[in-house]
Image (cartoon, rainbow, N blue to C red; front, side):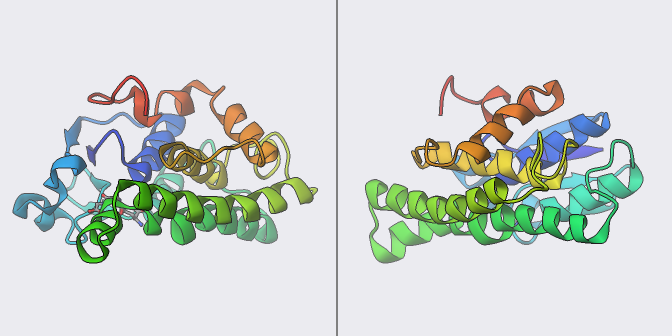
Length: 217
Ligand SMILES: N[C@@H](CCC(=O)N[C@@H](CS)C(=O)NCC(=O)O)C(=O)O
């Protein structure tokens, strides 16, 4: 398997966590420098026409893209440990928490959106940070209300087993740090992310631990 990756990519971070948790080894990690716009290079556009990371190439050449779809694939092909609970209502909650991060928040702050804000609407760096901070904060309020208010929240977002929800919370925390969001008002969210990072498979997937990353964000 080959993973197209960049240290900063939150969506790739999700896939890295799942690969590590499942114990799936990669043959190659191919760097696509998002800061230099390499996701728009014709060679990469052929692999993922969305011009976004991650892409996972399987041994038979199949290209997987979209991090949540890749997480599903890994969970289906490597069932242990499972990334979803068994019970349907529990699965729905886990997927919903994951989607607040991956579907409602993350798409608003990806490079193509930030670049468009700057080029079309003349947003300077401070304005872009304000934008990202705002959308993260909105979602964090919703996540905290759910996590703090649900009897289903345990050591992790749902019970005591790491799930897709936790993987996405970790990505959300990395995004929040990038946009200088203070996590103090979101103690349950922060506690769960800290809990996730006690697991080596999660901790070593962190963006700042990848090749090319700076010492701090
Ligand atoms: N929904 C996609 C998001 C993919 C995405 O936008 N990835 C970002 C990095 S985290 C990217 O490569 N963006 C390139 C760009 O915006 O130009 C997923 O979860 O895989």
